[in-house]
Amino acid sequence: MPSVRCHLDGFEVPLTEGMRSLVITVALEGDGLPRRALQVRMWPDLESCSAAKRLRQLLWRVKRETGDRLLNAASGCVRLAETVSVDLRSAERRARGIVNGEICPSIDPAEWSFLGEELLSGWPDESVWEAQDRWNRLRLLALERLAERALQAGDFPAAIELASVAVSVDEFNEVPHRVIAAAYLERGDLASSWRVFTKFQQLLRREMGLEPSASFRDLVGRGRVARSA
Image (tube, rainbow, N blue to C red; front, top):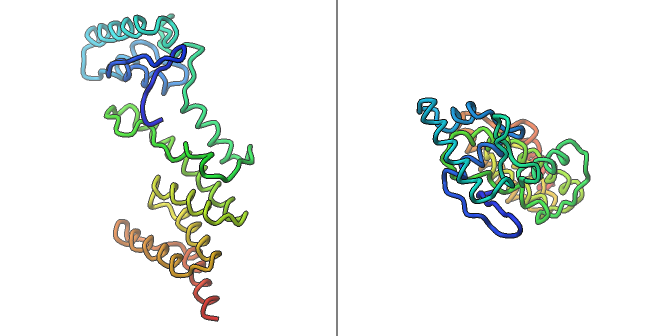
């Protein structure tokens, strides 16, 4: 999901930046958008007649390149054609399945590498920011569940890898840091566990004036006591 590509009949269809913006805006709205709402979303600073003209031009260009197989603009509403699939929707379904416990997935990090992908990274349009935030929250929860499952199963390298990806999504979230520290403790690597805790502690103090939870402190504290005993 790092970029936008349109494939028809096994071939990639080149889209201009304006066409990609149109497709992205429509794709992120599962039920499509009325023309007027779409115009406002894409060109909020333009007068209605100018925005309507731009939309007609873009729709014509998309139709010229893809026929009716990409967008449907009938009945005053612009939506994806029924045969179009969006990888974001598939990723969201799989991630929700993990979070809700509806599936019992493999903990192989390679199988869930899509959870490490950002949505439209670097895309300048503000209209995608909300969708990016939603995807980040969802994939963070899914990564936490997978990392915790790997930890419980005794697959400590997988737990560390999955939790590390979660940290890259939100470095201020304590759960993945705690999973990493616990995995190191289970491997008998007290130094690495303590380093994870202190690094997170310094981050919270510096950026937020906060401290890690008591449960995180107790976790690494128990490890130090056990090692000294």
